[in-house]
Image (tube, rainbow, N blue to C red):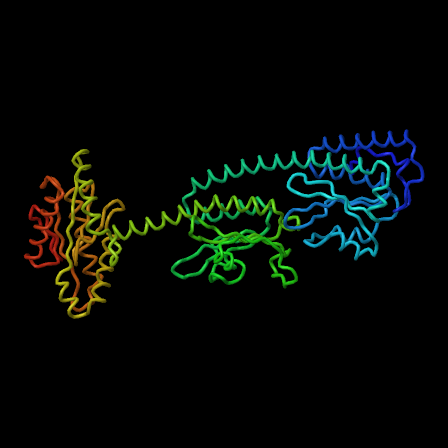
Length: 501
C-alpha cells in the first residue's frame, strides 16, 4: 500500500472515544502542516482509487481508530475503503465492507458491532456524496483540536481527484458515444447491429451478461435476438409477452428500471442480483428492451452506469428505427416487384427492367434476347385439378425457369400462365438453346401428370425490333406460331423450329 504522507499524531492520539490529553500550540501547528501536506499528496493522485489508498492508512494512524470512507449515489451507498490503526481490526467493519446497501449504513454497522458509529459528511464530489465513518459519538470527534480542519482538507483533496476523474470519464464517454454512433450509421446487417448495440452497452456498464429483445409484431411478443455472456441458442426460442416479467414490463411501460432482485431466488447463470432493464423507444414507438446484469466487479450498477446506458440506448433507438424502416421498405419493394404466387418478378418490374436492358444493349452494341413462355392448355389443368393445384404447377414451372437460366437473366411472370425471360448479351443460338432446355425440363418434370404439362416458347431478338414493346411483340408472334404448330415447341422470329424429339 502506498502510504504517501503519514500524519503525526502527537496531540490527537488517544484511546478510542477519549478526548486528547494535551494540546500544545506548536504540536497543533505541526499537525495542521501535516494535514495540508497529506491533502496535497492525495490531490496529486492520478486516480480516485490511488487517492483513497493514499489517505485511508494515514487517517487511521493519525486518529488511532478504524476508519472507512463511504460514497453514495441516488441508487445506493458504497463502501470505498477502510483502514485500521496498529490495534486489532474490528470484525464488524470487515463484514460491513463486503456489502452495498440502499439502507442507512450507520444503523447497519451499529447493529453489527453493538457500538456507536459516526458518519462525517465530506461533501459531494464527482457525482457522489462522500462520508468518513468513525467509531464513537460525533461529539467526541467534534471536540478534538484540528478535527474540523482535517475533515475540510480530506474533503478538498478527494474532491480534486473525484471531480477530475469524473471529467475524464465524461470525456471518454463522449468519445465512445461518438464512435458508437458512427458505427451505428454504417451498420446495415440486422444481426450485426443487434450484437453491436448489446456488446457496446454491456462493455460501457461492465455487465457480464445481457440480452436484447425486439418486438415481433406478427407474434405480439418480444424475441431475444442477441445475448452477451451466454449462448443465444439458450433463449432464442423464448417469446415474452408485453407485461410479462422484467423485460415485458419494461417494454409495456416504456420506463427504464435499475435495481436489485433482493431475496428472490437467483437463476443459475447470474452471479449477482443487480440488473438494469432499458426499453428501446423511438418517438412514441417501443421497439424492444435491453437487459443487463452482473457487473463484473460484483457491485451494484451505479447511477452513472444507468445514465450512460440510457444515453446509449437512445442513440441506438434511431438505428433500430432505421433498420425497421429499411425492412418495411424491402417488404414493400418486394410486394411491388415480386409475384406472390411464383416468387418471380412481376410484370411491372419487367417492363421497367426491359426498357433499361434495351437501352443498354443499343448503347453497348450487344445482343438482347427475350423468351416468352406459355404453359400449354393451362385452363384444362385448372379445370381438371383445381386452382390450388394450378398454383403449384405455376410455382414448379417458375423454379424450373430460375434453374435453367444464367444468374444475370431476368425471370418474370408476365400474366396468367405466361412467363418472360430477358437475356442480356445472348445471341439467337444461345437463346434457342436455353429455350429448348427449359421446354425439355418441363416436359420431363411433369411427364407422369394427367393431363400432361408442357410449355411453348417464343424467342425474340432485339435486332428484329426497335423498342421494348416491339421486342415483346416479336416474341409473342413467335409464341403464337409455336402454338399453331402443335405446342410444346420452341419458335423463333426467323421461323426456326426446335421440335420435340
